[in-house]
Image (tube, rainbow, N blue to C red; front, side, top):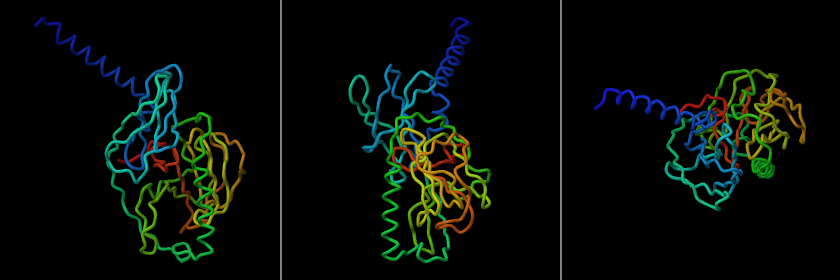
Length: 282
């Protein structure tokens, strides 16, 4: 073999690695955590027109990454088992099914003692209120606006350490309830809560479990929810800039002390907010 062949092969390998790194852009590297409760980033090609796609019947967020290729950013439910999932894609060539793999992830447990027994086993009157508020929240999570998110590497909504992570199996007074659907920040009461990305306020209120709550639509089914607030400083319809103050940290609703609970939803699925701030732990 001529002496220059090994050098040529090395150059080709380096070039191929660079092409692969270039093909996977920053957003893909940040967000692609395809596990239950995570996010799957799926390459949809470089067609001239934006494709559309649905997952489990809900429209998904699609952006053009690095000005080159379209990617779908899909929220994966906590209830999904490891294996293959399907995305329904509509592009210029018609409808097609694109498969993607979901890995496994084990979540820890959290046991909490609540003094107010109604916040563990509510009576009929409170259940009626809870169900009404749940329907309002689900409707907010299901909204899908045409706007593009201003940023996908989110700012942290408060200055404070992370406390309870997403996905914890939760036991209140020894009784199992729904897994933890958001990410908690330890912060003192009155700490300003800032929008991690620009958006429109689509729901506010004082809710039975969540206390003072704000929903912000960042665009294309990407929704943030902030709760347990001591004060709300925005109203429905407000356009808030990235970093705009939404309210203040508190301990309203089912909370044992002041903190911020932050949900992130994609295609009406709650996903781990830590992914969007670069703090995801496999």
